[in-house]
Image (cartoon, helix red, strand yellow):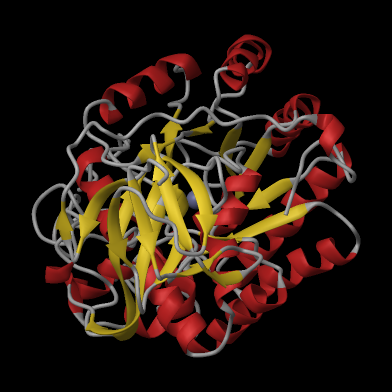
Length: 476
Ligand code: URP
Ligand code: ZN
Ligand code: ZN
């Protein structure tokens, strides 16, 4: 009899390509065999459960220093526990460079924040806010070699934004080195102008956040980002796409054969302007950028997920508490919308929401669910096939998923350190039962069983050019 550490028996095993009935044997944290009737070692009976690759949340923010004095509610401990309890086994948060700061120093700072805290494995994207000659010429090439192979750039936010020339410099670098650029696409001057006009008219309530960033603001910046990428001839990924108009730009670009990838998030499927109409300061709970759009917009985001415009479904978990001094009320109760920290929590609810309303509601099939939430981000960001699939030799990062369990979502169920969920009261079908990271059960039935600090840093790979047909990187 073979000598395994663990065998997961009787489950329905799902990858981005297939659904099959087989057992999974694990040894040394890796998948050692996939076959019927495996034995030899401790067993978990997965009868009636789906066995999926653990989710990869490729866009989440933990313990990120904020320029306005606000504080994120989740550090790497609470954030990674929350992720694991929601079926996610890899997180890719951001190491953000402050303008004038060395990028290497920013990375070292984030390692200190994550060290000893994470319960699941993590990689880092970089945020480049200051692409000067030293950063592009010296620091970034060395960081790429050390496994930081993707970076986000912002077209808005005063402390982060790049102008078009700087964007071109970054994209030119990405093309030379084969790195992936993620773009936050909103037109900063339009937002500033609209915000001033709204404030002059006394329209400072939370709901006016969305009025200050309407769809054309996102559409224009998305088109510009596509244009810049086309000029340089480099793939880019547009993050947190919210609305029909930006989706149309991306579909148009993809139709022309440009390598434009795109990500959307739960807030654009399940929140809408109606949430920003909530009375008083309540609406601040749903302030994020880009903002949720009209309810009729949600169907276009679903279409983008079904039809392939989107390759990645991430949470954009940006955790700020509603009560207390340093969260949404950082600038005071009833602060004007411009002073409210942007972002919604969602690292734990990402998979259950998409499973329930996507798979169980018949909008997407289970293999597409796996592609959007695990396999594609692993491929795009250089973690595949170690992460994001179920295959011999891959890390045994798995989630045993109960497709029948009915759950009424409440914040009390969740493990983040935020005092609300924007999805309170939603009725969902399907919930993670057991999450395994490198073969170790890290969460079972909502109970965390992992020791903080067991999570490891994952250097991401740059693609090997020889393996591509279409360009200098492998893409989904
Ligand atoms: O409102 C959001 N999305 N906050 C997080 C930061 C970002 O731009 O992703
Ligand atoms: Zn962003
Ligand atoms: Zn974000």
